Length: 116
Length: 116
Picture 1 (cartoon, chains in turn brown, cyan):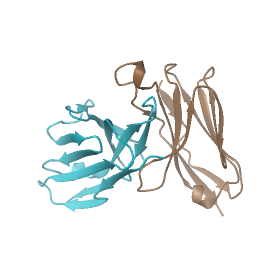
Picture 2 (cartoon, each protein chain N blue to C red; picture 1 turned 135 degrees about the vertical axis):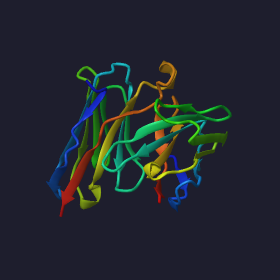
Picture 3 (cartoon, chains in turn brown, yellow; picture 1 turned 90 degrees about the vertical axis):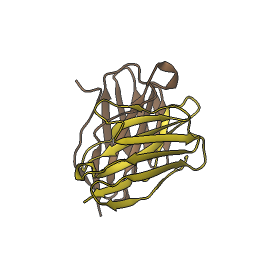
Picture 4 (cartoon, each protein chain N blue to C red; picture 1 turned 30 degrees about the vertical axis):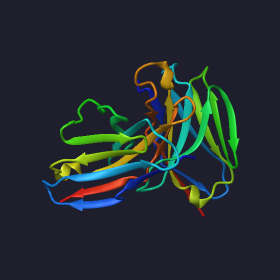
């Protein structure tokens, strides 16, 4: 079983739809959870960052973490064509959890297309 | 969020030559930087962890003599691809470790290397 599982898609939705992206993980040491957006031929851009379980909202984006289920989600409301990108979940145990624990473990990324 | 720059954004070189890629953290100090490569439609693959003032730590399978990393200051890390060959053609992305608990990474825009 891979440490982080993410459905690669592709996922295609009409403009205005609510998008749900998910990742599951197996390492219970992970405490920090991130979502990155990567446009084609660009570096990943940090979208959302959450620590431990709970919800975090930023504009049209909501990140959810359920540590008991080892499941994280990113919701995009009122999706726009400019949201079309690959979304990567990433997680780490944090710098003080041991050697190399600050390294990020990525999902494979979900390619999202929002159709006008 | 924190800003990381890379230079050059794109480089084409002949087989056998060396190429240097610079990674700078513009508005924060990055004691630790990371170098990744990404092949088309694949996720990021960590190549090495670069710590300011010390030798880089390379991931298994990455040739340290081929991919020379120097992290001479808190804001600059360089990756030199020595004696480049066509199979080294890829998208190289750096990131800087950041956050109060050093739990997240901010990525540069990437450098596309094409070796002819």
